[in-house]
Image (cartoon, rainbow, N blue to C red; front, side):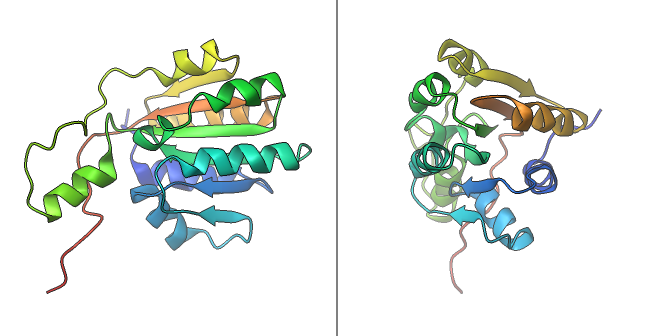
Length: 180
């Protein structure tokens, strides 16, 4: 039983997406997708929380084609309430939340800046599955790499909005480096 790594999530989403539009939020996942996926329907952005709004808009404008939003838990907190609208309108939207229990990009940035004990970067105990279900979405949690493909198959086939919460290690990847 192997734990899930960010690269596992990116690889699985790329493999399963078919012709879905993929919207990617900032952080480690965005860099991995950019390096591995040059699909013309992939949208990258560098604003926290912006990916969900873009994904909802695309799903609303293209109701016959699936949209996938790949986002971290910190970014997801900026506009998670929009899942309610997606569920009510039965939008073809699958949100994949990579949950590392915090703002991973900001943790990495604070390391580069050599700032310790930055308050507010940890987000322990947020249950995105319960939030999504409470807003009317189909939702599932993934904790093992072997669960990724079946969860994505389910989420991408769901008639309406779905959320897949993927639990990953909270270790901080080095995303930003000082120039020497």
